[in-house]
Image (cartoon, rainbow, N blue to C red; front, top):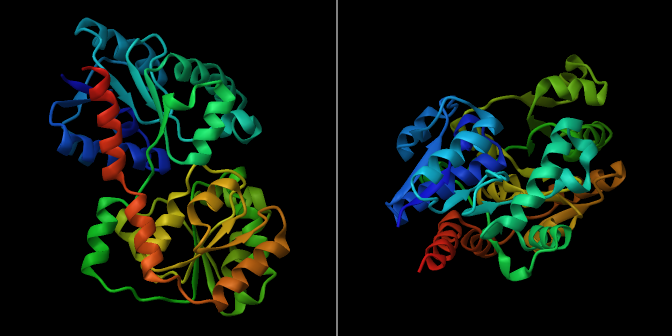
Length: 351
């Protein structure tokens, strides 16, 4: 049996969804060589596309390619199983397996453009109900999906995110050198609460002893906070955009604290990457972070500035979590086991 993977993630900048797609695809390719990765011609990540030996199909791009040319190609060769790791899939296709990372588009449609929210709220529930099986990245996300789309629990399996291969290799090669640095990684949008994190840092005593580094979209920082670039620089705040994998690894190695004050997440990869790199972690007190990081994190109310200040101060004064705890977490949350789960469910369904 040949397995096909919808590799549209190769055409997109890498964030959490794309990272899951890349790392699971690498593991799936190693475990199941009869896997073919399909993408359109507008490839962003050419190195990974070459590694996966991705096959370009059709002439269109984006959602239009996914909804027309991709299913047309697959139906011509007998409608084989198609794994879709990136939240969407061809609606008019009978043999879909899909990973839905979270349902932020449903619970908070105001966080995205009106067109995006309308499209996802139309598409994703229908795909989830028609799919052969649904995967997601945490037990919390599974509960949300089962409830929102009225699915039986047996139809949804948890396939956790993990630490990416390039980070595993670099950490083995180099020692950790910590600095008084607080690091926040994630696309700059409303749900990440970066604007409140910046305000909290500027009003805390830590601004005199630490630096805050935010890896995200610079342009949106200024519009969200109303703070100028000069003011941020004077406040010991550094903004980064489009860091390479190597540069981001170095930031994790240097950071004393990794923080995420998101209002909603399906997993929270930067927290796991921070834990793996020996960082203390500060998390929003939201269900998924309690599920995943309850024993190693300092928690805060992401909507209250003083709560963020208190959690950051507590983390700065605390010790790094026991390495046995962090090793336990990274052994549970990893892409190899997730790929095995995906393959087991898809191949068993074909027996």
